[in-house]
Length: 238
Length: 138
Image (cartoon, rainbow over all chains, first blue to last red; front, side, top):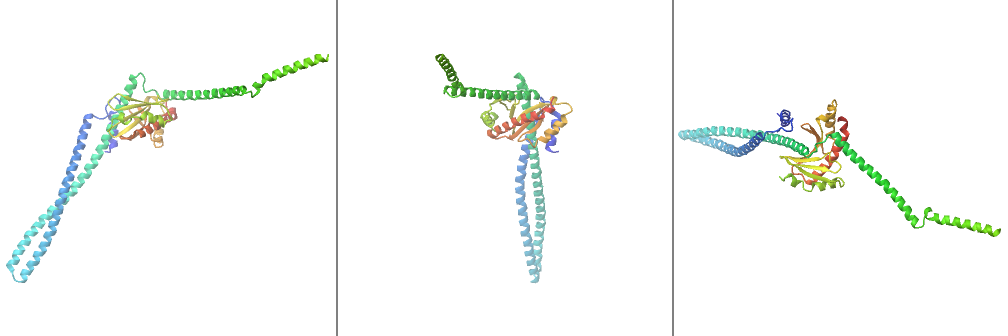
């Protein structure tokens, strides 16, 4: 079963309630121990593998050596026969026989070492895949557990503080409202700024004697004087 | 592995920087798992929670609960969330128990600067998602 599928089963079976623990803490520590043990046995297998491979190589060398010796002794036996040393040839044949026996033994050992090497390599491969799977599963289970526990702490903490995880729509409305308030305040401030800025400028211009406002008094005075003058002129003409 | 609070030292200032000077406030949540609550000015209703497990740091924002969904539109909402998942930058939708979340995951030894970026993006995404998907809510 895949790791994710197992976590799915875990979630379906036990985690629907926030209060419940997703992973049994005991099971987790047992699991962690299993991973440690598996890793240790992988290390052990690696050590064994090195030893067996060395023996396999030794056996292979011994086989080559024996084959060469057998060929050499057989050559010498032929030579003895040629020189009519029948009994010497027999003796050499006996020696070759013994060497053939050892060759057969060495060949069997070599085959068995080779088989062990293949087996150990397979064992390490599958054990490593299993450890990786276990570690991933454990990480997922622990993360799930931690997330659920965090959520529980958060709910409890917010609950005890008088507030709670508020309804989403309410939250959104409040945040929106706050943003609108801010936007309104900014618009208002901008308008006020503009207005104040406008008036301030008018006042500055007036103070400097520039613009309609500054001139008004002078214009009115001029009008009054002109009128007075006109009246005086009229009287003088009478 | 550093304790979460130590790892997140200075996060509030960095979030403020990342969000144009908004105030961010950090508060540890008591419990058996390390959790830090991040409240961001103007978005106090949508706090971000940062929590650490052995293998990763999770930043989460709770969106809505199962009982807030409009009856009859749940499947549509779920499909929308699946469709959006690859598109939403850095954040993914999920569910914890009865609560839907938007979350981002970081390596357990992530730098506080990266956590700040994550929190800022997550907060924007969460607000955006809530706004966009409020049509599915009661």
